[in-house]
Image 1 (cartoon, rainbow, N blue to C red):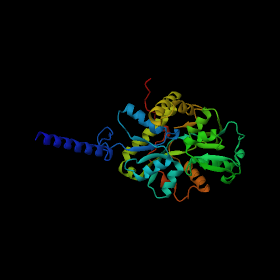
Image 2: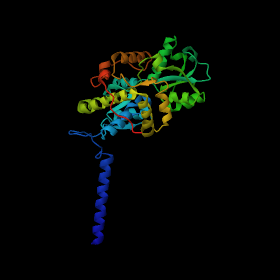
Image 3: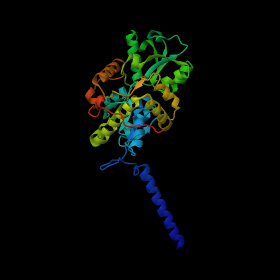
Image 4: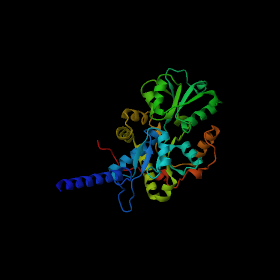
Length: 349
């Protein structure tokens, strides 16, 4: 009898453990919820370890330290294909994501229920060449190999835009699609003649001594936008308050980053160590050399910006031009930048 009772107890505990494991992994029973009445389960926000997405981890870090509760769960991806598939395939788990602006518009053209609600940054991109190359102006790119992140990257458009100014087209260069983390090594080895992506990969070539800036986005396309914060329409319908808090947090953390160089250097430290798994010196360099290399204020989506992106992308054969600004943007969440206040937060030394 004692043996039977022991077996029954072990079996019961085993079934309980399996049930709890299933509930935790698959049903998300133990997700932390937002504080206050009417709270909902924490939802995921997708991001890549690039400066265009910096406000995602900064918002999460500040909120955890100030509010002691999760506003959302940042979900890190290594590349665009995985991030895109998660957003499309599991919007119940990751209803919001930082994503390339042309990619968001293309998804809307394809029927995906996506809305841009905020910007991730302004500027923060460059075209780099090898420091020993003879490339000093756009015309020198004729016949050269240029690496860009992919079809829907705005870096492809910045190259197109500058070639157009010089009376050139994509036919005058060789475009190579390449993951941004691979670009520094490709430039170092001279496998390509020029590279363009979001930071910090462009800054890495400069910091390590073999890269030279051909163009900074801020100088040739002021207010340049690469990535945006996009949300699934079902989340807007069902969780509008949570989306509003997310956008407010992103806007406020952007203002906090731009408030002082101290905040930029603090962000470089805690983001690199806790979210990006990078050496902080790289983010420190990109966020300070020069200080306006990438900025995080004035992030309300503006019609003129997106219509220019859409027109260039249509000319370059990237977009069809079948949707309008109202189709892919919901600017009702984005506060007036003049009214956004940075959170009263300082990193403890």
